[in-house]
Length: 143
Length: 433
Figure 1 (cartoon, rainbow over the protein chains, first blue to last red):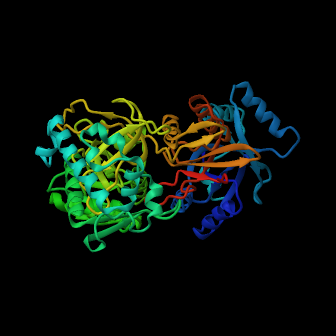
Figure 2: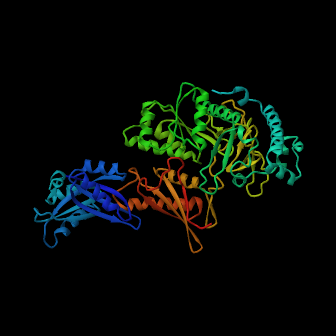
Figure 3: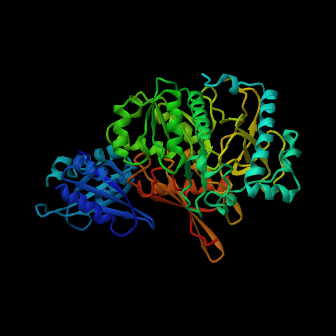
């Protein structure tokens, strides 16, 4: 039920992000979703990609520091209150959201939100009990 | 093992007698052959005949690095240029380069002292010594090279650079001893891992590391990562090059100075006064046997102390405490003295940080700013900003706490700090002097 995300450490200066996208493009890797967290000196780029292993080794070969983390992809109904219901359900269980980012796809009617939880397994349990559709990694990588 | 038992284990009274005899001879030679020294002696009203005991050393003038620069290139030679068989020189990044000449006998002595050094480090004729010190004007490469050959070991004259090839040959030739700077050894180790070679799987067992100050924490880090013994070798090109002192593998408790060739003193760097035995101060060396370019009371700028208590290895030579800084490297940040080695210790003690760092000092108005750039590797990298900021905060807090200076910590990409293939450039000082 988990999705593997890669994260890349970037110095906050011109050209670093485009260096990542260049490397991925040359390796024939498609980016499914991404988010960039930034501070004044550095940024952390998080990516869901079509081929995690290949992306990781291409980036590492080019000297980047790369990490991998488990996140959860949730289909959120496209109506008022859709996200709120999910967050409320999780907070009742004491699960904390570290960060999240959303994207939409052409084929999907609803939005997809990537969640990074402090306790991933409990979060998945809560979501499943609440009948919230979770998108498995395999499906997401090939979407 | 001891390479030269007669000299390396001589009782100290006998050693002092040898030193005095050589010192008297040296004073006579420099007074007769080097105008710089003749003038200095005359100015102080000292003649070579006034040196009757080792304590008379304090009558003699100091020699500073600037004196070598002022007499560039050959002004301090004590023999005709035709008797000089080799020249080495410093890179001269901070001014005119300093030149050092060697006679045939100087070269022979140097090889002898380097062979002693390798032996103290646990190496012998059966070893394969991979020399990754730079070859050329820098003394590291050729110094280690001739010492290794004198020992009868198999020497691989790799020099610096070409890291990938370096790692491949290290594996293929089955090196057992690695010679380079400590920071370059870590760089090689990382490069090896990237090409799928783990030093722990190689026959490598000893590293003879020197040419830059390093800390005990860095030694532990190197020993643990690479599964080798890391031995500190001491030397400076003005005096000879590597092999002025070497740690014994038995105790690894600071380099034994080759006192039959070098007379050591510890002085107060500010006043120039000699300090009592065991005190910490600046190391001053008089070269007792050098022919081409002997130096009287050369101020090394290295801060250390000397320990003459007997060593388990059997050598009677004094051990110098690990050099934690060169007084030249000392930064004064808002009135606080900071040595790069202190920052290095703090980084290594802050969980799992690599010792790849750089200090950038700048001035805004009249205020000094210290930026500490630290490379982020996979061990400390997190996808969460708060985790990374916590690391920054922790280092900043430790620097403030231990050194009393406020620094700004900047996390940078690996290799974000320029690595010279020889010495790591730890300091960028942007303040106008």
